[in-house]
Length: 146
Image (cartoon, rainbow, N blue to C red; front, side):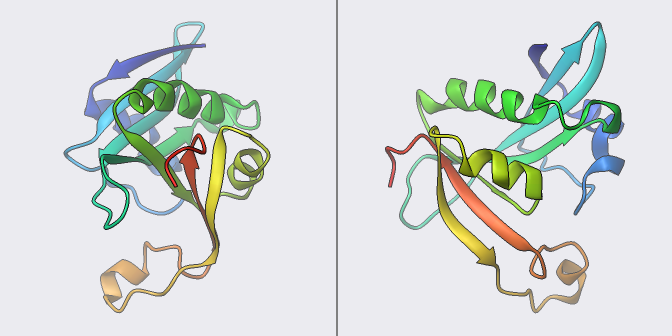
């Protein structure tokens, strides 16, 4: 698989496959994964303000097309992109996708800093797209920022 920085409009290929929200941040930096000249995966990274962790970026969207899921492509993309950003930033992800949580919990390069259910939104619009009723986990790439 080859991974390239890409334009935000590539998200249109992947948006219907994202499990929570179909929007993408206007400030995100995007990458796509290509196998045999076919775009099969997408990841976007955003700046994230945090009261304790400085220079934090987060994985904003990670999607692998259904025909290519279960092969470790999403994890490979995340690791590749996180290694690029790790030079200058702390980087993390919050996810409720069970197979990704399992994979990250078993990877020494990722440290789990939260596992459980998050608090629910009071905003009715956000309740439709949040993950408050799901088990959720947050991870930081490499163990050295906490």
